[in-house]
Image (cartoon, rainbow, N blue to C red):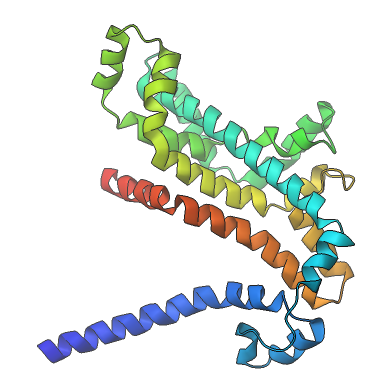
Length: 278
């Protein structure tokens, strides 16, 4: 029995190790290659040196990106649009989820049903409608066009609704008896208790906004609000120099990894709580 258990554990660890390698290998290759010359990358891609520091390693690719190509501007544009989108989306989606989950008002069931029905509608199906509205508002080629359309999303409203729905109603009744208004209850009590779902929404939205190509391509007309994914797309099509392309991919990947590492505790906690509630 003991030998069988050891074999099962060894097999399990082997499988987990292989899966981990499959997930870790691409970003490692991306990061290491970003410091190599294009000729060195072409040579190393045929062997294991693609995953190891090998040959001449330098910051020339990054100097080229942030110097001659002004990628810093695109990075700042992506950072501003993603960060502001997250802040506004967390606030407005949380307020909507709070109203649906804890407040009592006429038409609540109809409104909730409408929002839930929108969950099955793919975002691509309404992207043209969004474009028409943004164009009518005169926001084409402006930073607000990358922010306002994502302030409220049915899926994130639903996540906050699920969170607030399961919170004890006695907590709100006690706050009302102490003289708190509904906005005070939300901002001083409910919102601070929502860190796990806030982290989840922030991570999901950041990943979506940071790597989005379709919507920025529709509303961007100049380099003034051009974001990193569009820059990477144009670089990949116009350049044959793999060094800067790998460096650009690293610039896009690292912020996402930092955000996840910073909020992984709250993210995992939110997923665990959702599983328990389900």
